[in-house]
Image (cartoon, rainbow, N blue to C red; front, side):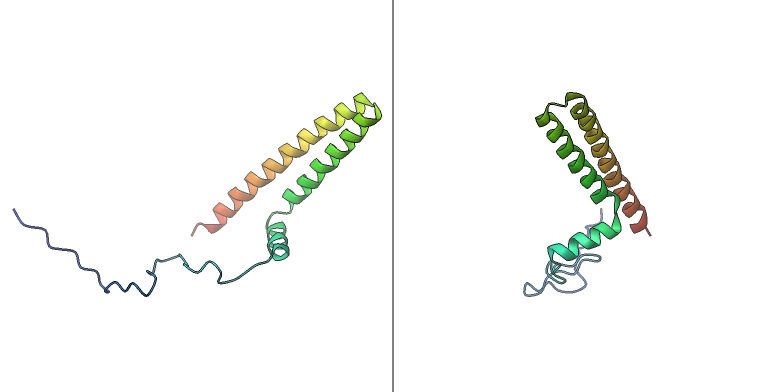
Length: 106
C-alpha cells in the first residue's frame, strides 16, 4: 500500500499578508458608502420596495386616523389595504432577490 505524499502549498504561508481567495475581498472598507448613496443605489436596483413601504405607511396612517375619528368601516378598509401593500412589498423584495440571483449567475 502506497503512503500518501504530504500536500505542499504552491506558495508559502505568510502571516503578515491576508490569504488570497478568489472572488473575496478581505478589505471591508475598500469603498465606503454612506446611507444616502446606499439608499439611492438600492432604490435604483429595486424601486418597487420603497413604493410598497410608502404605500404601507400611508395606509397605516390613514387607517389609524380613521380609527381615531370613529370611522370604523374606513379604518377596516385601510387595514386591509395596508395588508395588501405589505404583501406587495414582500413580493417586490422576493422578486428583486430572484432577479439579482439570476443576474449574478455566469
